[in-house]
Length: 117
Image 1 (cartoon, rainbow, N blue to C red):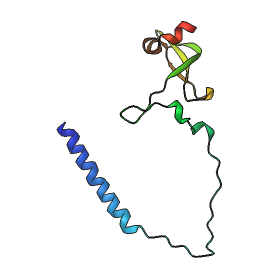
Image 2 (image 1 turned 45 degrees about the horizontal axis):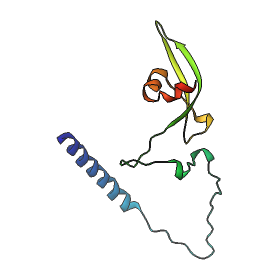
Image 3 (image 1 turned 135 degrees about the vertical axis):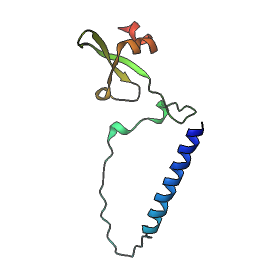
Image 4 (image 1 turned 30 degrees about the vertical axis):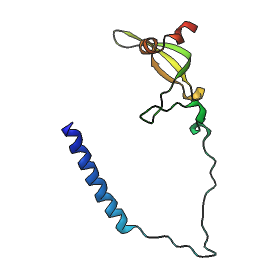
């Protein structure tokens, strides 16, 4: 616990130094009539948009991804053993963003996914 406090104090000191340095160099922006601003019109990437109703935020203000389905299975050979992996589709992600996870860990955490297969 004492190390945590020391780390927090040092982080605050570093942030304070950086803020004071940035504040010295910061200047107020002033615009006049007929000033031209060159802004890009950008369409956001749809993969970064997550529907709000699909997310359950916990007390740490983060959310846990929930696996929906297993899309594929593969067995990789290492030197002396074989490692089974499954491709998992997560709740708020698209098929292209599915990840490979260790089959043993997924069976332990989410056995209901393997009843369907």
